[in-house]
Image (cartoon, rainbow, N blue to C red):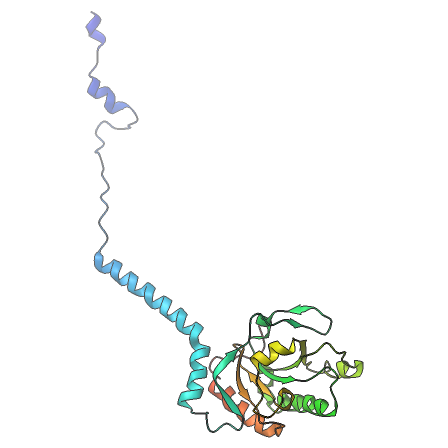
Length: 239
């Protein structure tokens, strides 16, 4: 009979793609997130972000600690600059060969800075010598300090002087327009920029001005205090 070869449709459907007629149907149930767990994860994320911010802010905190907790103000021989003055990002810096230099490259190290004309007379040479001696006075900490000579004019530097400032640990010699230097660094009233040492911190902020024509030992005493106050985050060598 024509109906003798018919089969049960339900049984046929169970055979397709299955190794067993009796395999149970398995369902996976996903639980909803625990509100308490999600809240804890969010708190940990915020705490991690706060720690990153605190690490980045450490140099600023250290500087303010040195000013207000250790109370260097009033005990410094030179003039503490409060508030500090940031190195202008747009300052037009060039090396002696005329190549542009980014202001950002000066950060990462204490800068013992002088401003002297390219002609560099006897008084200028004496200042550059004192700058070199000052750095050497710091012994094992001297690698935390760079020497910077800013030239506010386009005059030529004598070959013998140029050679002298590159011997040993070289002086970083950069030109910048006088107006831009004067907008950043200021001499004491009645004096000129060339009479001072200016101390720039590793964040690029001018924070100390020596007395006019200072004794090197006096400048060292002030720098000693600043280096000790910031010893926790200051590292030798510019990145």
